[in-house]
Image 1 (tube, rainbow, N blue to C red):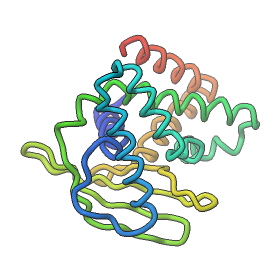
Image 2 (image 1 turned 30 degrees about the vertical axis):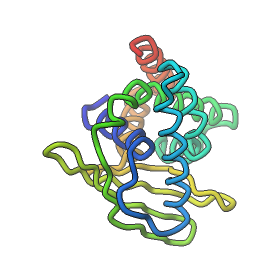
Image 3 (image 1 turned 90 degrees about the vertical axis):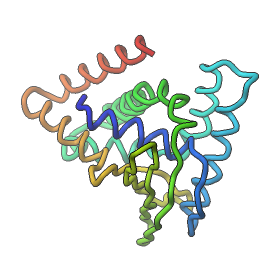
Image 4 (image 1 turned 180 degrees about the vertical axis):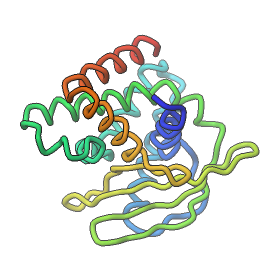
Length: 201
């Protein structure tokens, strides 16, 4: 995985859940996000729980608000349409495992080191983009969240950091592997990566 992709995962999939709210968002997507942030922070800062227990609590809070299928579908691109229902289910599960393995051990490290400035929200029918800036020591990183409304529930389907989309980044990597080899090879590599990250964590 590229350094930029790793940075995107760490910031995009943890900071939006684990930092204090600076300012106020306007609109349903931000109200949902604020509720998730507060619940996640409460679980993360529970001194009576061990680190792994806290991570599992945060995962249970966060998962309902991430549309892993939409993220996986967009990341896979045209190849998605060629998969059977069983293959799609397998890929979504593998993609979700990849994201979790990539960010879970970073959560606690970043929780106390940043704050977020909320700079705007764009609503376009069933889609929304919440714009923020991650403020760290000597650093300001534009970080936007793309959400989709599914039956009245807003869920994150992409994260954009410094103008680079997590989904687009994955799609270019996945497309290259499929083009140079095969979809089966992509699945094999993802399983290997998840296994390596899990052992390292």
